[in-house]
Length: 350
Image (tube, rainbow, N blue to C red; front, side, top):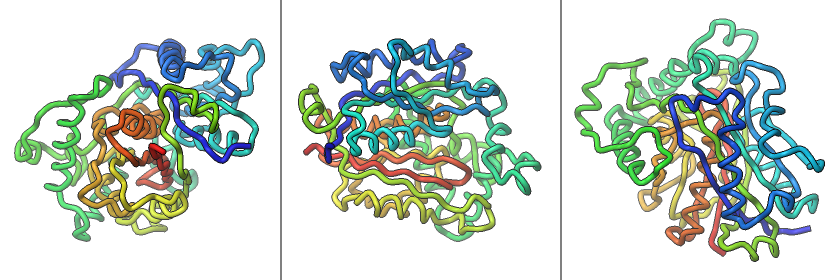
């Protein structure tokens, strides 16, 4: 049994408006190959495979079974799946290694968001008895949260636009981003509302994509060319009902950060915030000060493939540590409506 686990490889596919694939296999194969190559690991050396995807996004039952074609099911492998962002598959693999059930693991997530009307499909994440039958779209649900935060003075439309300007500028250095460039703050604020107070720049684009992460236990990780040690990982959940919590706060993110022992001297945080106001709420919930660099990759606002964008945040944070640009970093993932579920993964150089 190992008490040490590290990220030793990461790869992702470009975030595209439509990847053209039907099963995700065509997208996953090159991503898995690049992640294993970075870890210098043969696929036959992977002890445990775990994925994150969604049947209701794919529109068919057991859709993840198709993706097994990308990893190869013969000779027999040890494989698992979570019906949510692959960041939670990463948590399962992390626990498997800590428990001594595996020495190495490959985690992957994929999503073809362009297959349907994503804003309507995500209504299936809501309370199935009283809210989902009304089919409120995901942007309108996020707008309710943003309106609550603006009216409470927690965020402002200008501060939200500043998040978009910074994210898109940083995304210029990320070849996998879907949206990037230099934008004028006042020009963005002059744009029309999609759902008051959210404008186009406040919302992540609809993206197809995939990501893969390789984990290894202590001694095996030390043999890899690069590594980022996981010093803590935890996830928590808030009530599903939108009226059962204060939407201007994210207590499950605070609790996850506390459980993961998020350090006070963090250098980088990759936050899974599909809407600009959600980054501001998360920064407050996690206690991130001005010294912490937020989303140097551009974040989900510049490319948000469903069910892999959260895993990509952990991979991007690990990349900052493995490259030496950061000593400590955190990857965050969210799932469900209005930041209902939150996961925090803390990564360190040593």
